[in-house]
Length: 71
Image (cartoon, rainbow, N blue to C red; front, side, top):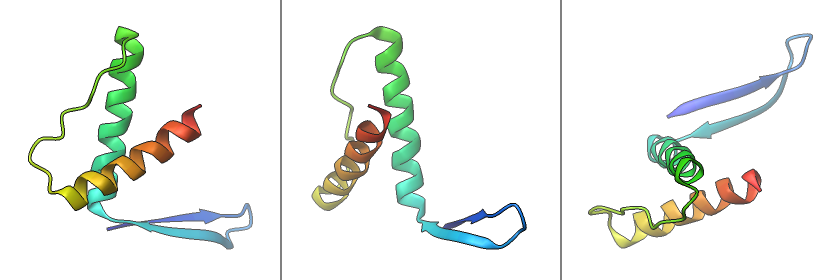
């Protein structure tokens, strides 16, 4: 688990989020996938490996957010 804290210039806490390990792994995988796509200029399906159905759905939800924010 990672805790990210946004501080104001005076050091007061403005916002905090906690990100679990799975989400971090998916974000890094999503960024790597976007870089590969940009380098090859082709869209391809990412390998999902042996993830359970619930993890694949969660992964797709996170990747969808990443892609929406990148657009």
